[in-house]
Image (cartoon, rainbow, N blue to C red; front, side, top):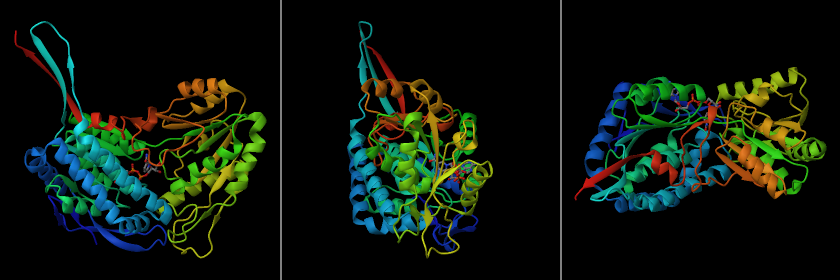
Length: 477
Ligand code: NAD
């Protein structure tokens, strides 16, 4: 059983109500979390405000950075424990859970080092004036996070804000709170003042809605579905504050006939089975030039048919999906595509011996998928890859940009001019050429356009999101 973490202490919450958390690998209850209310959120925001006005806010940038860097070391000291909790909560294979904890520590290293490097600048102005532009914290920032990469999201969303000097309140996803709660305790142990990091667990429409609407929040960071993202943005509008929204995608891998197939095939497969397809940047559409379609998609199919889903301990290509609802949702995409007669080019397997109650889905490759189909337009958030043939470069760009999303794109070609033309033309916040994904890519600005959301996380740009720019004009004669 876990509790909220408010003002440096575990608390049961005002109502004492709890809810079950099921292990995706088994479908069985393995813990309960506290169900936060608007009052719990209010307690957390007040604790954060007090920290911002007190011990946390008084630290220099270098002191903040040092604490965050200490947390990176602390994470390494607790590496196995954190990886195990993350795998239990999400069902992901142990190797992927370990890679996630490694990336989480990298966020703490990066933002620990970045905290004292947020420089302002000076603007030459009229004679007799000095003008400086400085970046200041918002005060208290709110963070609502999903269940797919709970530890990494903590590292990504909260740490940039903390480095900038804000105090934070987090509402993690109800399915996966354990690593965030543990990281908050580890932060206390390395010396973060009480109230700098506060966590209220519970339901989205209760604790999440209360957090996004709280007048004490200066800026919101949301990652999740477009539907909830809209609600969060509306709540922010009521308080006239800004927000970043990271809402997923339908990201294309564009493969031209001159691509290095041996390099591309394993990465195209990995980009959709990584985290069982529950990745906002999953490469869920593979677009292949018509004359190379059969050869390339055939090679992907051969590798796809070797994929296996199992428990974290089996440590296979993928795990279960997060819950029964998500399992039903992913399966409905697969069933509908089959009913529509879209060819199944390959299926992976659910490993023998997985617990009956676990939320497993068979990795499935469809193609050719008709343009305009649901598999082209909607985010499945599961291990389902859709293949599409295209004619030429302009058709490839049209197809890549055919969805309302715009998060990530991959371009596979040896032609340097084409690499640049296509990279400039695809609608995406990140473009990879002859590769896909960057092992967390902590240093690289990340975010979307259109239905994928707005604002940038990761890298130095995230610090700007969590800051208010102030122009100081000094008339001194
Ligand atoms: P969701 O958007 O419902 O939940 C994300 C977070 O928002 C959770 O912490 C949740 O408790 C909270 N939330 C829910 N309702 C809220 C409300 N009214 N106000 C404030 N916060 C609220 O996402 P989900 O149900 O976990 O997943 C549904 C779909 O979202 C997935 O199938 C996938 O397409 C997408 N998704 C995207 C990402 C991503 O990284 N972009 C991550 C998870 C899910």
